[in-house]
Length: 173
Image (cartoon, rainbow, N blue to C red):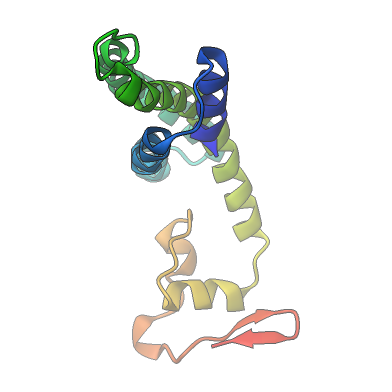
């Protein structure tokens, strides 16, 4: 979704139709876009032990990782510019892929830096209000959650039995 906005705008601006190359570019973007978010969230998790305030952690992680994220994104975009604006024989074939990549990378980079910290903060708020059954089930099933290990460490692994996640009246074992 973060890259889709840029893909749509780039294709509309350049008057390129959807084609196989555009869909190939979208598949490539699926793997590429995640990297910026992983770098940002990893830094937030790394700062957990030194910075107690979640908002300060998010601001510091954004400041620390802004340069690496921008450098990798801009170098990739610069690499696709010759392919996007080439007038060679094969440019009709590969230009839509390059335009898709450029639009997707630019929009996903900007939106990753703005939206991912908000989703992280929202996830932490949800976990703060979660009950012990949910945390126990999450820990038992190794669900990746943006919380400190110390919050669920009160459940000793040796004492674990299969946990049940209660969602309303539905029980998932």
